[in-house]
Length: 415
Image 1 (spheres, rainbow, N blue to C red):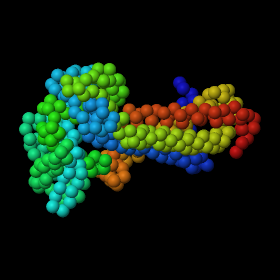
Image 2 (cartoon, helix red, strand yellow):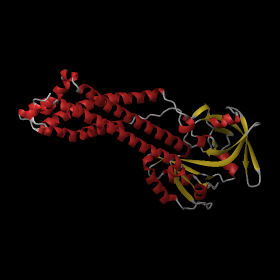
Image 3 (cartoon, rainbow, N blue to C red):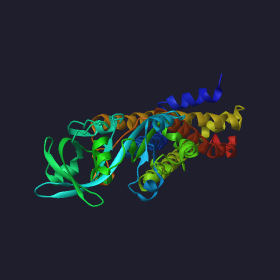
Image 4 (tube, rainbow, N blue to C red):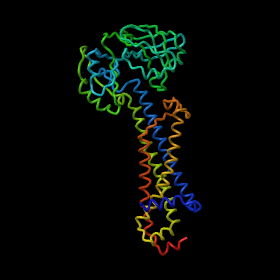
């Protein structure tokens, strides 16, 4: 039989104890643990949701790794590379690669009778993964992505549509500057997308690969490059090293030099900002643990002082200091467990409400999303619970040694 656990359970269930001065201390300690744990769960779920939502949006436009001409990647020069079947097959065969898709870029101008707008046309082939852009579609349909025929269809963003006062089905002239001439195309707006990433929404529209390749005057097997999606984003650095060793600084049949670049290096400011969120989470976690720890320490000290007579009696009956310390640590575990139960219900409940209702809104101009994103990461929640329990109990070990200084002769008379 575990004597400390038995005594702690009897003390915790003692109805008379709730009428003493320890009652508010226990409530404050329980509330401290509950609020701290709830805030930690909400913080981690929101930050993970925010990071992954923004990251997935950026990756949706640029994939994990881009293979293109060296000058194009370093200086944004419009240099093509050969992306024939053998090159694509070689890239698809590399370890960790999930999907490979070609793309071609061309700067141009969209013009209506009232206004004009400079944009980047992104041409995609039939192998293009439409999952992201289809999920971002708010009106119309996707263009017929092809490298064999011109569809003359155009997918534009909501911000472009608002500025040029366009809607699906409208036809618009597009102008492209060449070496010594200006080319004109009349395109049909087949769809409108919205991602709330201002950097992309204001600049990028989609059409078929063949249209952009012909406008650039390239060969049929040339493109701006290939976008590579990995099986595991967390292994992007290893995949980039492998990509560099296989394809970097090799020359295609047209004389262009292949190179590769990760999405993190393409958009360092966005990913650097997302990394800073991790620091904010650690600060919140530390503050909440400190708050919970201090409330538990104060509560335990009050309980020990109030139970001085009982401690003296136990010592007089032969109980060791270690046994009594363990008794009060078990008592603290009961309080912590109750606070954690309340904190889990509160934290997980609020996260689920936000996830399924989108109750809390955000300004997409500032945060790139219109609602607070939440990701229910079960392993992270379990880890937070375990860490909270262990840390809360650990900080109580030192205060529990106060019991060693209580003398039975004096404590039995203590009131």
